[in-house]
Image (cartoon, rainbow, N blue to C red; front, side):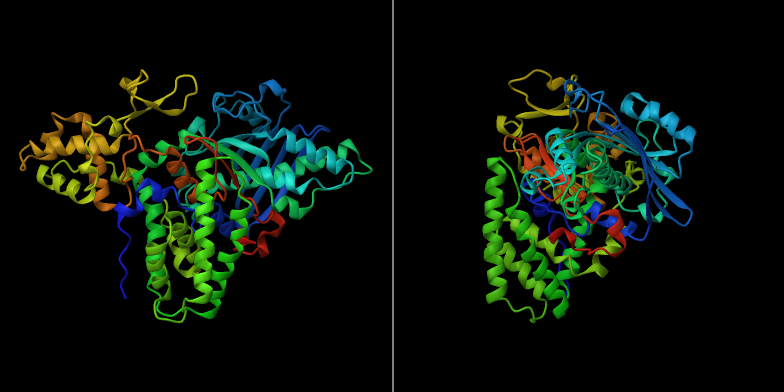
Length: 550
């Protein structure tokens, strides 16, 4: 049986992309799997009684070592800000390639806390900073120092002791360029070093809170219970700064989605499913309900989505228990067809993620294909013709070509870089000034403009000749030739229209990172938690790969 890959015109709609959930393909899960056999160690821990100072953690295997260097700083309350443009944080971190010497630590002690204003070297791979959730951190210290564990209910509501405000890599601020390290097999998956940094930062937060509590009351203090530690992650507030990424990296986006779609296709093509595979799928599905019912948010938009997901999942589980025959041929295909017919997008994509759990042999090889050498696809084939380019647009952007951009609602917004916040923003072009500074993120509108111009050009013209008088559309010509080869490289929606929900773009990327619970604070930013429930470093060698649902 040959099941076709899903149509990009369905999958690449923002409402569908914004319904994606974490899966075995997610970067934090593939990072844990890759590094579970590495030796973890806390190499240095020189913090004063208040928890300020330096710590170093490492992963080692054979001759390869990655070291996280942590700098915990004293910070006045009025200096604490989660904005990207902040200049001081509770802690700053860099992932070092190898074992740092004393002179490296001295150099970095001066540079890392400055973040963007500092200067890193090729020895450093990633850079980040984080702030305490002061209320939670202080509550945990107070409790532990008195010999008791903190209030679990309070911790569950927040989910972390620290939240990061940025994680940088790939050559920024002097960090090692990707070309130096891209051939290392252990980091073939996207964002793997960034995931390592966040994971080790999580451990630092536990060690720091234990250290401060112990110094506060040496005789009575106890350590934070490992089970409570496991249920804490690292928080993050993510805004519109993340949205342009998925537009600006089309081949990378394609490879992420393609891995997911290929997994689904291959699973639907399995003729006979074993009892063990059935039990694992059903077990993860049923246990995962706990994650949804403990999902805290005040967003009406998200509450509505959660209620719909919970209702559909309960109905779906009842259907599987009472009516569905797992022993029929191609059972997962029949299940998927029923999902598309009877359930909401959020539920469909949730179950698609869950379907991957029993099939390591299908998913793991695809993880190796999720990175992209984007420079290979940057050149425009200028010898191709106008007729060929028109055919690509008609084939790959059929629905977008039907949008009328002369209507106000279809051309309502524009993307720009805020001068004050130094971050991407979205504004109403009819109410606010600045549309002349618009970023090239309105791909749907530019595709339509390109098509209209191609339609009045000679079919025999080469792309070189067409671009000689239409150079302002070079970016979208390039994208068209990319989408010809990479079907999932383009959002098939209008990113400047009245109906845009920018958090759909954020959720798409964060689902691939491995975020579990999304807490929108508006339609333009949300909070998440990373590694919540994940095994602690000393548990990695024998951890349960399906920890997400335990």
